[in-house]
Amino acid sequence: MLLAADVGNTETVLGVFDGPELVHTWRLSTQPERSADELALLLSGLLEHRGLTLEKLTGVCVASVVPDVTQQLRELAARYLTFEPLIVGPGTRTGVSVLTDNPREVGADRIVNTLAAFTRFGGPTIVVDFGTGTNFDVVSEDGEFLGGVIAPGLQISAATLVQRAARLTRVELEAPPSVIGTSTVTAIQSGLVYGTAGEVDGIVE
Image 1 (cartoon, one colour):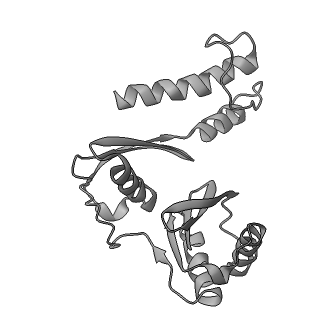
Image 2 (image 1 turned 135 degrees about the vertical axis):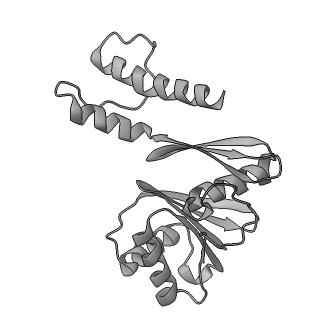
């Protein structure tokens, strides 16, 4: 069984594959201060809840944009697993050609987005990845990563708005009944949700 880890700045998504089938997923907060032992305990608990153990894993693949967590996952593998993890990064043979000014600065998340999108849908295509930042990854008809756009993410925008405006409060990130907000809460929700949707539509167009 393969454990895949997508380590973002805010959240980490874990998935277990049995052959080509994704059978389990978990979403965790990314906490760079966690040690390898803490990560092993957390992972063991998640697996145990699904009737699995670390010993049943036959591979681990990590796409991380948080170097501290990447290092701790390396240490976890060294202490608790019998094989080396595959860490996606500069030099990893993914089959994706990176046609940017400096290919080594392109995040692992954008490489695996490109590979997954091209494998599943072919090219050309655009991947929109909502995380701490909203990434637009542009894939050529041959599966090459051409570049893209990085914009502030939805949660970052919401948090900054509340921090910088004394009378605005946090709201649930859901679409209000109308684009025209009739209260402060629905006006903020409209700006965040429909504003992000409009940003995506505009940039993709």
